[in-house]
Amino acid sequence: MILKAGQVSSRLGKSDTSPWCALVFGDDDGVVNDLADEIADVWTNKASGAARQITLDDDDIRREPHLLSDRIETGSLLGEIEIVRVRTSGEKISKPVLDLIARADQMSAGFANRLLVLNGSLNKRSKLRTTIEQSKSAAAIQVYSDTTESLKSIVRDKLAAFDVEIAPEALEDFVGLLPGHRGLANQETEKLALYGKGLGRPLSVSDVREVCRTDAEDSVRDLAQAALSGEPNRTQAEYERVIESGTTTISVLRVLEMEIRRLLQARGLLGTGGDIGKRLRPPVWGSEWPGFRARLDLWSATSLTRLLSAVHDMEMQAKTAGAASDPALRLLLLDIVRSAAVRRKQV
Image 1 (cartoon, helix red, strand yellow):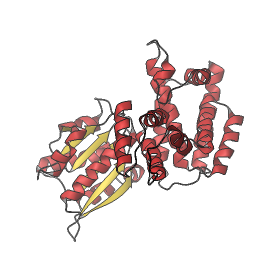
Image 2 (cartoon, rainbow, N blue to C red):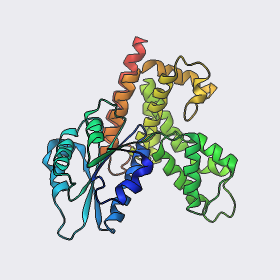
Image 3 (cartoon, helix red, strand yellow):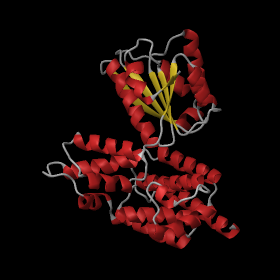
């Protein structure tokens, strides 16, 4: 079945025949994660709190396809349910998932436990998507990236939960700094909330700039841009600064993802006229445009999409927030620099 994000509570929490499996997919994995958290909370509340969440790696499932069915079909002796959460991309683990769905539909009932599948953008020809959309026991939910207005509302609500107010001009400035990535937006909002707790006044523009812009973050952005530009010496220098700052692998990957998404968005806007830089999130201002345009010329939409998938795969492997000196991250950056350098020679 097909559900909308706003139907989660009513369709997954109240009916005895509610879906036992939910596929949540969309371009922004931060939005995907937030809705998956909401679904898990609904299932947990429905089970009167007797639910335990576990996370499986899609690589583990590909190596041992029975692992997923074992977890889903095995009920707890104590009566609690397990919510199995899997982050994947494309059709990587579609077969074991679709096998379970086919059996559930045949039985006209779900299994003892629940399954959450988190995915990226899936087109309408995706077998995983279309099968779940047609299923009677599972639900497919597509989510979309935040707009400026929806992001303002999210930030206001999250700050209000901490009894923190923000001035309108500060909110405008803060949202302008965000990369259009819900995961990063959540992190930055939490930093603002902790800073503003007990402040006794609304957060100001200067507060936002002080809390949300650091030299370390600038170095991470410079690192991502240097790698995508195919500049090995500059990449190495920025990488050393990032290591010295103690930045985590996850933080580097998310900023790298932001830069890739901006390039993808710009590719889609080419030929539409107007100032493309100002329409991106975050915007690319006049002084930054020549460098951004040079990177844009190096990467096709297909190559950026593949690169984004590689970043997602690595982020899933980085389950702990390890240091940016992670060898896997170094190899990824090296591959990006080499690819971009080759592309520069071809331009």
